[in-house]
Length: 300
Image (tube, rainbow, N blue to C red; front, side, top):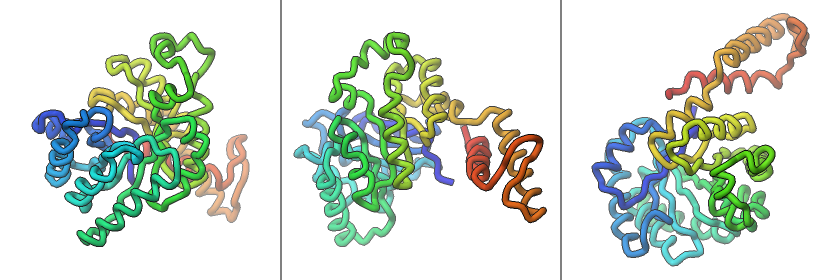
């Protein structure tokens, strides 16, 4: 079972030994080497070369490998793709697409990768994480989610989307009681709805205060309860907190196993549904129960 509980971003210009150590020890499900905002324009070429080398090293363990490229509308994106995918496309699992507002931008990435496949011969799938970073992107979410078979996930980019919408995120980060409830409930629900409609992963927003593990845990639990598959994280020390938040409680695990046992008894009796210990059960409970058990068995 592929896991996407955590997607950890690592700047592409950090010292290589530090990056290698983080990759080898962080425990994130997906590790995303960054070419976008964390890399100054004058260092893009340096970061591309470093990332190609890192992708080809045997340091990744069970983690999936991703690279965040610059906005497709920027002057850097095409070279990002041609350098990284051309140099290590056979080692790459995903591309994180920054600031896509239109279908045409995603189709441009499709064309660049198709050219590189023809030139280099790699055949492995490379999925796209499409980040929701603007009002236009969230308005166009169904089009963006369904425009290419390479789209595999939708990500909630809370900072850029807040700026686009005029949300007072700085005040909210400092004091969540200023807003009654979850300030981003609609945005999260919209991303989850589109992801489920088109069979994609839904990746929740990062919590920007790296040392605030209590709020991170609460935020991650909210997202897991809503239906997110995982959360974007900004530092290695956030990984375990999110994994623990996505792990079912012992009571949830006991209930999941009990539900499957009851459904097996109903099936053995030739029934597709029935009342067991006062609770109505039918086939709809099976997959959630299996998913709960899988999350419980996943490594922290």
